[in-house]
Image (cartoon, rainbow, N blue to C red; front, side, top):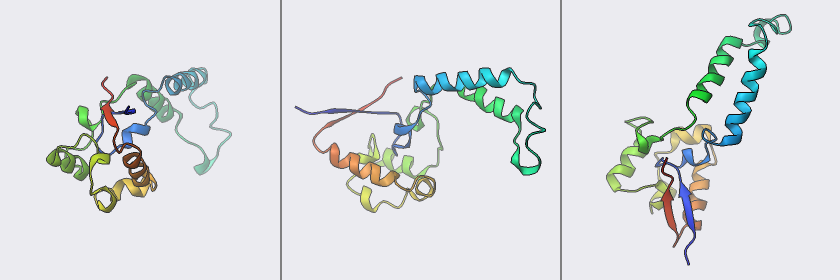
Length: 141
């Protein structure tokens, strides 16, 4: 009996760990936005001088962005970078996900992702090992 692993709509697997469509994340963002909306724009300005502060209007815009984008279709669904080397490779090799690729361990296309998420490729290699003989399913909206 094979175990089914649900994958989101990305080739590289970065979206698999995204919180964007997680209900608890969206509830937390809505709650923070509710608190922020109760304050005048410069309520905290006197508390943080110089470089310590941040733009409350920008912060509000960020919260509104999360609430207006509760789900991302991922690069397989039309988002992401058209010229992403990982995306191009997966499409050319007809892979649904990089964890299907036997060349994953020596793949050099993850350089940019690894700068921000240094353990991501190891995550994919563990997933590849875990899914040996299992069915990968893409999460469909």
